[in-house]
Image (tube, rainbow, N blue to C red):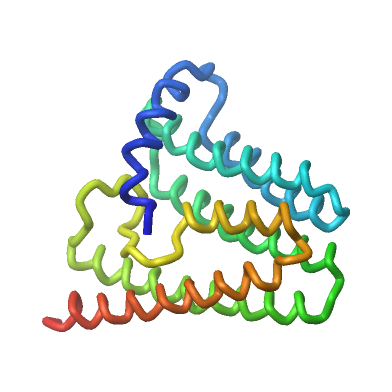
Length: 203
């Protein structure tokens, strides 16, 4: 919901940092460290180190924004880089709730997180297929800097960062937080289904 609105702000903040990064620091290296931080956040949540898990998660998310800025700054942006970035994001978005589930160790939490990850799966299909068809038609929303067009929805990257941070800080309430999130993701799937019907009706 907020990603497109905040993208210019994020770029404004990160572009100067990217321009000052040493030449040997590649976008791929930053993406890899971002992935390690997000997986590390899941492991820290598993071990009960809430503060460390939050720090790793937020550092990982900042680096996830920085890798694209570095690629644009040094002219190395590529479709493969976008593919790797999205793949790494998906791994991180899986590692954190799993780490929380292992840390809490309660059946109810596992059940809610199973529903959440299921909603992620359906959501991924809903937006990736719609994105592929829109790209095929040469349609892209104004202001997008992502590798593929990303139709808007209630729960996007910004909301995920906020909700995961709260869940890492309050793992005892993760089942409630993730239940709300799964509901929001489901609404997003419905939003994109409506958008698909409107945008793809002519062909």
